[in-house]
Length: 104
Length: 204
Image (cartoon, rainbow over all chains, first blue to last red; front, side):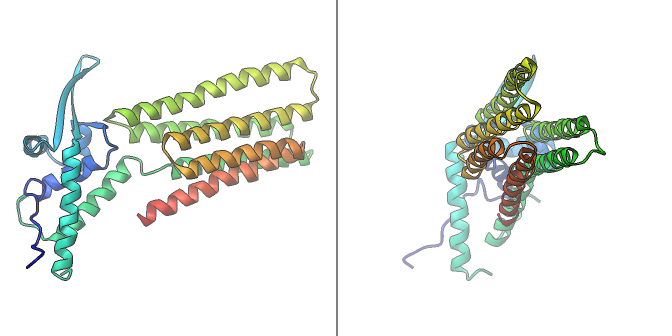
């Protein structure tokens, strides 16, 4: 075949990490979200979310910053430019796959 | 359980589902806030106009109705934006806060000016009414122009332009029709904008 089926990025192509990526992509570029708010947007346990964030961070799709606000530690999460680009090519690949298989 | 293989279609469904959820939680758009202001303007200024046409309602009642409705709309707007912005940090939070403070600062400044001019007592009460409706529509218009620039939102910019046209119109038609301009052009402008935003949200 001249046009092989695209590979789906395994970092994103897993239910939990896909949802994390979608939620983060819903923020404006350069905006960050606190860990508890992200948890609330996703209905995930803290442990589960941490695990998946670490995998996304290892792939450099997500940037995690620890900061202090009024002496309280806060964890801030944001999608990196690479993460946003990876998510875009992932959705493009999904559409290509659907077209190739006739959408079923 | 999280690593169950997903088909492309399941994956796209999951994206759409999480997108809807995120958008709803993060505030979606200004439709609801604009609808609250549409209600306050149409009912408040409509009632005030009605009060000028009948002797059965004392003039000050209109002022009280407007004040109550505006405070309620302000509280609602503040609540909705604070709720949507919970846990978000960064440029859009800063811009949103600066925009909110701009409304507060500009409103206080304009109140001082209008109250002072009113107190001189040189203007007739009809002219005072035009001063207030004209300047407040102008301020509203200018701040929506600014909002349109901030968020690169042509609809919001258009709402601002429309409010400035209404400001001119309100002083040209004179008292008491200026209250009708506030209710129909001002409130109607908010209502139209709210409807367009609402339809856009639903169709995405």
